[in-house]
Image (tube, rainbow, N blue to C red):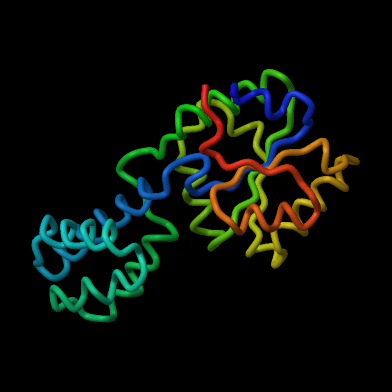
Length: 202
């Protein structure tokens, strides 16, 4: 189905950020690259080897305990956990983060039709803001309203309801676009229409 068929009767669309608007791997792999460069500079460990280990471990087993595994593999002092974590929050990326092509086109259509766009994102607020600042929005940034659930200390469903209330809208006037079961469950709590981002294509 053409993506726009989902929202022809909606006034607002609410997105998660990670793996909905852009691939989170693009952020994390650049953070690992920067950390590997840092390790080479401070500890004279070969950056290419450190990065290759981190990339493989991440792709096979995910991000959990990645610093600990890398530190054990290369004899890296545990004090550098701080630097690793800090890079996740404020890294200046070598490359801009790019939106999924289908999501970029979808959001551009929403703007043309004067529909409101919200991003409600979980996770560390400083890290999520850093991602947003380093994303190539192609001019869309001025049409975005962003909520950080952790900063507000609210669940997503509470934020969804607040968005509806502040715009005098019912659940039938909105759509949530997510990529995980949590987003689906939070939407379902107030019967808010929900679709998985992968369903949006041209």
